[in-house]
Image (tube, rainbow, N blue to C red; front, side, top):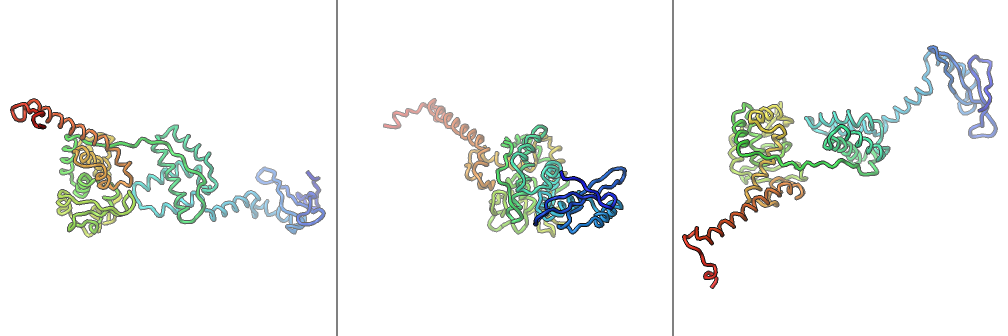
Length: 385
């Protein structure tokens, strides 16, 4: 390092360094001062590039002592903060993405996940700066104390935020695929005849008629929770006997048939000034039915892990498949599944129905062979001659 050379000004010195953009050398000025019991030594500028003199360096030293001038570190942090504001960091993207979401329980849950798991690690970074190793470390760390489903929700949220940014042309996306934990969520919640009877009785006796009718419609149609909340009167075609499902989870708008039970239910359902069939507060779109639904679930003494609205959708599907009268393609259309793979979770119930039908055929033929049907043994050989 070059030799320190004192000036006539206290606490101001310089070192000789190669001149930037020219031949020869120039002076690089430094200041030394004591503040709050601590000695500070800072570089303040160059002779030619910054047009700095010993007198100007001494003036900067005085301002630093009096607190009128920020330190180089403070300047860097301020510049970095200003740069971050201009950049689409994950934090800034989350705020923009959040503004596009409907208020409700799912948004509250996602905000909690973001603040707890994503913000501390990725909040001040741009998506293009994220590397696979960072996300792998987060996934591995979370899996030590959280369920695979929870970790998948967290990583899904990060993916949604980045996809939102790319879709709207705000910034670059990730250069790799986010690996998520494998989750076995093939859970076909079903109710026994006794449980279903108790549930229907609890629904009939509940004081909240709006939620009671909502739960019945879930059971009669297999509609999703969000589809029920979004359902408007204009989506119900009594004349043709169909219900239009807008922005279905399966992709585009869907249409499902309206059976007589649904027709009777909606004909008697209270119609308010709200455009929604099951309006929330102030006639706006409903965002929750948790209190009434949980009350009904408790009164019906259903299993703790039974998710009422989602479970009623599964019960609807299970009843249809178990009847042996509905094929998987028809069930897929009724449930508005985008892919037949989603419907395959009910295939085992279809197989059971087919087995029962096969057993029934065996019993019928066996009875015929034993002469139980007509009182005598049927001679199959004679029948064929």
